[in-house]
Image (cartoon, rainbow, N blue to C red; front, side):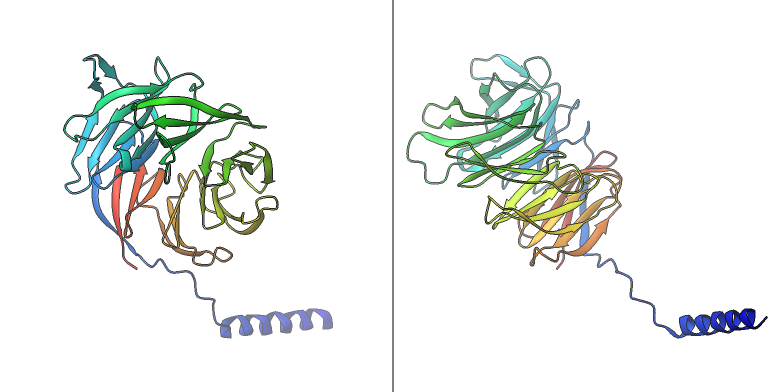
Length: 342
């Protein structure tokens, strides 16, 4: 009996204490993202890149599109006329990259030839296919194209892409206006789903193997790090690798010493994290049914969630546009443009 009384008293005291205690303040959505325009598209957005005039979007079975960044007017592109007057058709596209410094666009077509079309975009009213990357291009999982800084010869553009268990790097001859070919092929232990590069290294998002780091000069594997989740995409900025890791959410890794990468922080997003972009001390992750996550990564060791945007439905892609805008590619709502107010 005495024991029952004591238990009753203790329960009453606990209830009183809990009623007097202050609740911790829940995270509040700061609502820094303001919708500017929603642009419906045909197909499912799978990749996107942009210059100062257009957003270029691959739409899988919907071919590809470009959207005017001033008027938000979309143009659906299923075919183009090449230099020799032949018709180049687009049926299924997966990857896309633009190099505005040299007015070249690279579009990965997977139907039939399964290659990368090279399109001259000097005249925005007349897009002209004039070459292609062929051979070792079947089922490209990710592709990064960029201008070579201060080129010492005729090669002005570099292309890094991953297929199956191979990482390929090649160069584009700006003087001749043609693809020179693959310069380096690196066999990876698993299929890489995402790639990035800097002046010294190639970085591969390698599913359950995490991140792999290769020396550009020697092609040697110099560092690797596994973590929770399956690495899908990687973006390296200022010595830190930002990884979208599917069920693992966002991981941030210190790669300033590539031989000993260190996981410095993680954030478990809802849904599956599939894409990552970083700019101006902000990172954005698209996370499928979990929506879009916008972070302040001024301190990579302690990323701060700014906003979780769920209004787009199932999101495939999210990418910064300039310094104050965000573009979201959604399976359900097409392409949405947002202003970042902060």
